[in-house]
Length: 230
Image (cartoon, rainbow, N blue to C red):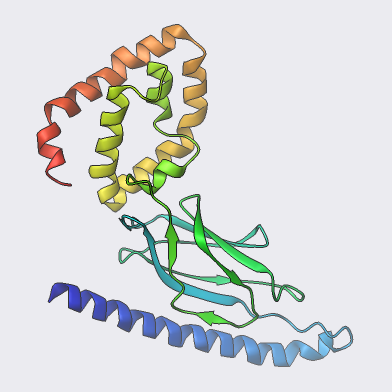
């Protein structure tokens, strides 16, 4: 029953937003009619944005709230939004005269989505669902770096300790919006730190013994508890 209510609420909100989008596009059409004479000489009327909305998911489940969704027009970023608590998104992709027919692509959390579209002035795609691939772990597995501070500390990305850290990330952190934001922040700020660590044996040992090993020990001790949340 709760799921039915939630789905009904989402449909109602989506319908309300769609009405709002239609009103916005209508206002833009009227505005375009007022300013069109200024463009009449060059035959270049203002272009209306292309509206996209739908769900966001991986092959293993929904994407966490707050995940960034970016829209690109022929490879140029044009708009950005975030995933809602219902794993949905909506975005207006602006364009200019001559952009009709260009390719619109999307990234979710920096990962290329499988879907693309053709940009059309004033078009409404309110069931344009986005999906990104998954290898059975999380969508963050497809980012260029993966647990790289720990990898730098241990000197390998296949250490058993790193697999434990990945498991905690996937089972606990990515199961909620706050944890997802933390992981995303980690992936943004950690590459330069890992690079410095990897170049100095003393730092590698210090980080491993003083930071990573204690965390791994705690996760090992509590493994049975947090694994039950999967």
